[in-house]
Amino acid sequence: MYRFATCIAIALTAFAGTARASLIPAGTDMSSLTIDLEGNIVGDQFGTRAVNENYDNFRSATSTPPGASNFLAVLNVGTAEIADDLNMVSVGAGWLDSMGLTVANAGCTSGNLTGGSGTIRFYNQVGGTFISGFTFTLPALAVPNNGGSRISFAAGALTGLNIFLPANVYVSTQWNTMTFSSAACSMAANAGVQIRGPINTGTSTDQLINVTTNTPFNFGGNPAANMGYFIKTNDVPEPASLAMLGFGALALIRRRR
Image 1 (cartoon, rainbow, N blue to C red):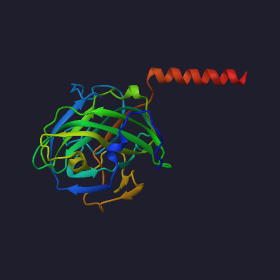
Image 2 (image 1 turned 120 degrees about the vertical axis):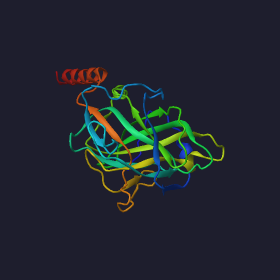
Image 3 (image 1 turned 135 degrees about the vertical axis):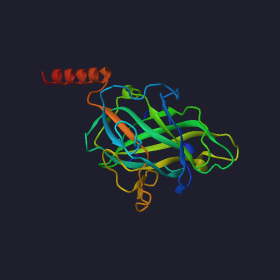
Image 4 (image 1 turned 180 degrees about the vertical axis):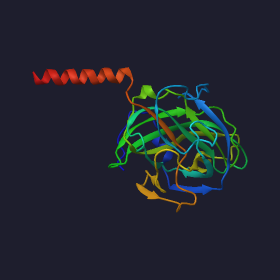
């Protein structure tokens, strides 16, 4: 894939070094929190906003809509940028409204994962070109060794980013900072994401993409190589984007005169 320059502030030097990915024994969810981009915990659990649920291997058997999602393992991404392929063919492309992801303590035996910040990046599966991304702050956590937390952005929290996603994307989570209650634990060695299944909406192959080295890898289906993501989109962009589209159309008309 091709790494295009972005306008988002990312400390890329924090990820220099040897790329590695390893599976940690299955753990348990310690919390499920809905936040805004600043890491504030909010009460909106996706409410009644009319959005499309594009992809989901994240929900429990008792959620609405229901789904039997199992916490299969913890993936330690180390210094690599690891992406998962999300094929949102059930409803197609759309404007990003909200999404869910996971954070995991992948091996800190002497302390809890307590917080940090990360970056989400989206790539087009066609050519691997960069689409867009955003940074976010985690809320206060207390995740023990081999445990994880589901983090959801509230309904509409991401609409202002005006990110249009095609139906087939790669999505990565990369940790910019990570804090632990023990000085013996480090971001590169102990920060991770969850591998979950089964997928409820859309599809994903049994492989992940190492964006750092531009190579795919998989676990042979045991467990399936699917990160814990879900994505919701709107059919229309924010008014600001509509205005820009209008200005673009007006400029085109003027050029034709």
